[in-house]
Image 1: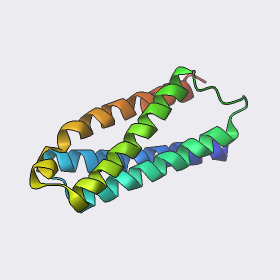
Image 2: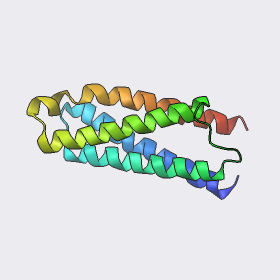
Image 3: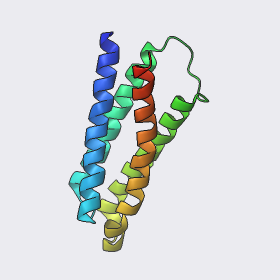
Amino acid sequence: MPATIKISAFLITLALIFYSLGIWTERFAHYLKPRHVIAFWTGLLFDILGTWTMHRMADRPFNIFEPHTLTGQIALWLMLVHAIWATWVIWKGSEKARKGFHRYSLFVWLVWLIPYFGGVYMGMSK
């Protein structure tokens, strides 16, 4: 297995770990805290780095309409919006917003799992 595949898989797995920690600790706390926002941004950063690494080793042109690419892009954009929104809620949001934020988080995490496990499946089927 080429080193770039190992590196990208490692980065994407770090994204899974950090994003999941942020989502689930915030969910169980029922209250958005700065450490959750840090975990969201860290997970997003690792996901971007892993995706970029995978994209660089692709042997064919980028096609947004491939299912894995499309779901991955949707997940990345949702993660970005989620992290920005979480940051705003911490800085300017009300107590009600901090307490109710977790409702959206689980949706973003579940959408993110689709390309993650799709990529695992694609990697295992080669």
